[in-house]
Length: 124
Image 1: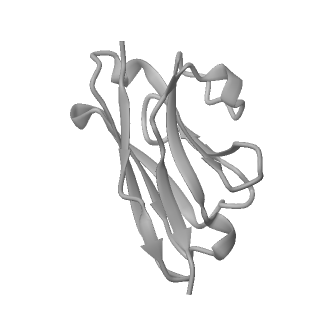
Image 2: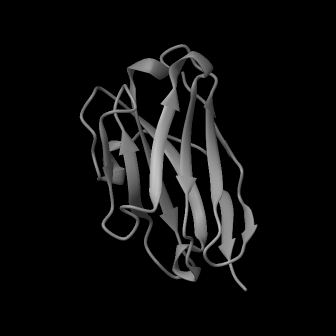
């Protein structure tokens, strides 16, 4: 049984950077595809990006491609979301999630383990 805990959220200026971390407490982290999702006020939760069992297998939403980077350190049971060139539109609660298998899915319904979320606010 995996438990996911996000950290690293906060307030940042437009154009700034922030790195989120998601730490897993279970023993099967390296077998999980890890995704990042976000939910802004009044909006549906949306896909941000995901990583397969290694950092080289990643997918990103068009809205963040080129600005956000997912990496993972399986030895530390941690996945990261590096966010650069942040925009006010990136303001949301960010969640990490895990699913079994190697398929890097964009569908939140295919993820079955979720963290509590961390707030990211991009504002001047």
